[in-house]
Length: 266
Image 1: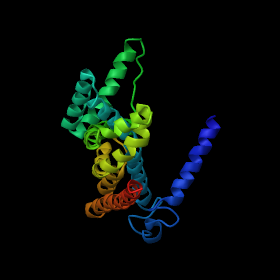
Image 2 (image 1 turned 45 degrees about the horizontal axis):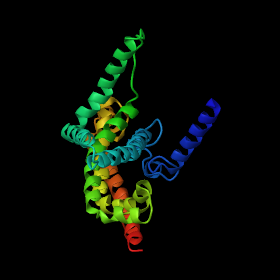
Image 3 (image 1 turned 90 degrees about the horizontal axis):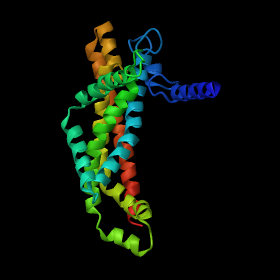
Image 4 (image 1 turned 90 degrees about the vertical axis):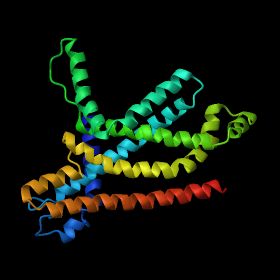
């Protein structure tokens, strides 16, 4: 089993290296960064910046589905007939929309370590426990994203006429089937603009993970600045990379909106 995971890891690393837009075979730094501070390899900072870009994208992509799932569950809870469930969902969104993202990150990264350490100590286990920075960052961003996402989805739910549910009942569909076949396609189309804005915010919020030592774009460029003293070059590069991610995201979101629009007219 270890051999299988090792092989999969090697294959994934090879694929990432091939498609790397900065230091891959056709990467920008590979072709235009030679003999500069952005050269790939030991002579420059290109490979470190490329690694930071991969971490930033990985954090955002891993956070998105988790945040969407939690947000969907919370949105269902907010429109539940159970008063306690509505109250719990409202408290959840109030807390994580009201707390700064950085504070949420600190609480999850440091607080969870303290809580787990205390719990294990009560069972006689005194070894030091450390939470993986990537996992902590993903969880922190997921709960913040889900709090805002739930409000977007709740508004989309309320925009769908109740007659849609009654139509599903009339056709003999169970509520789960009605949700999947009737409600969800409309929900996605209505909520997509709001979710697109949240995705853009999430891309920027990934910079917070640099505070807990995760080597994302901001941390790698910061290290490069401290070593080379060329702040303008590397911070301008960080700005360009975030803008590039935003542009690519806008193109992808536009394609999804056109597709959902076509689906809605059928």
